[in-house]
Amino acid sequence: MTTIYHNPRCRKSRETLAILEERKEEFTIIKYLETPPTEEELTEIIKLLGIPPLELVRKNETIWKDNFKGKELSDLELVKIMIENPKLIERPIVIKNNKAVIGRPPQKVIDIL
Image (cartoon, rainbow, N blue to C red; front, side, top):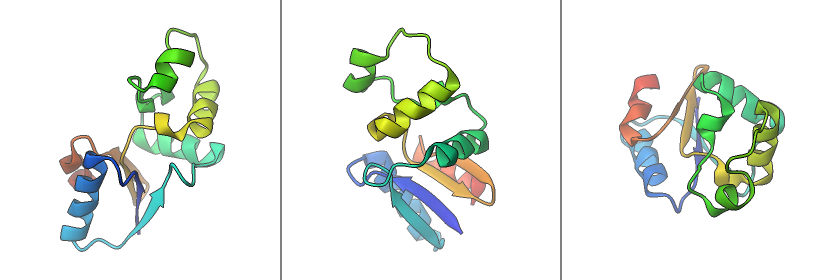
């Protein structure tokens, strides 16, 4: 089963969802702004992506610039910040068979399908 962490207001997220639909993938949609991942879930997602937590942060968001930019933060602190402020999580994230990818550009999702 494929999972997409989706924001319906994001064009890249909608384009990634369209790719899943075109390929007739069975998938689960998690609207992560409404249902943020737990600390354990986000830590696992970061592990599957193979990136440090900072690379998953949307650094152009006002929340980041006003509150966290330039601060020394541990990986755990970054995870907690993203959980408390899910708007900071880069999107969309697609997971399938213990592999994950950020759909930027949306075509990157094809790599794990």
